[in-house]
Length: 263
Image: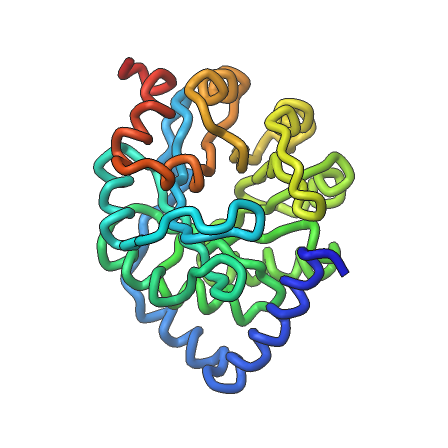
């Protein structure tokens, strides 16, 4: 069993346990009573690449990323620096995230939030909606086509935008035509952890025209961001690179400023 399979197997057990303590019906009712949340895709500016900035403590590939992380303060720094959205890691065992982080970020900023999780069950869709998420991540590598299609329909019912993540042509072909809002091209192979930003450029012209593209992982310099913007990528998802320095706002400016015409 590789690490991705291990994470997903643990996630299935975790979700089943949580479902027993917090029924889906309760989450649906909470979601319906929440105030409206800001849209993500509709807020993107044509020709200006957006930044989805991540709140993340650690990862299996990078280890500890930031020794002390204040989710709310980090999110406010991202908002001030011009991020279009904030991604919050939900997995605790492997990434050090969780619901408390999401609640803290939601109370701190008015930006759209991405519920970044290994989603395997419709319960998680309603959990995301109940917490005030705008977008939910659905990873093609861990979902069969039938399950993914059902989760996309659940997202529509819950009022969530869907970011369907692929990392090769086979996965992209399998999900094309499913009606997702956003396609995330992950430059990191989740099974080998190898990173190649060229993955985005090689898959970009195969993405359905109605979908906005988010490039994920391995984005570390302004030149790459400019190239992605010129190629038509709508947004980049960046966490580790922004979180390693002392000044998060400065890190955002160095990475995104050229593409945004600020340097």
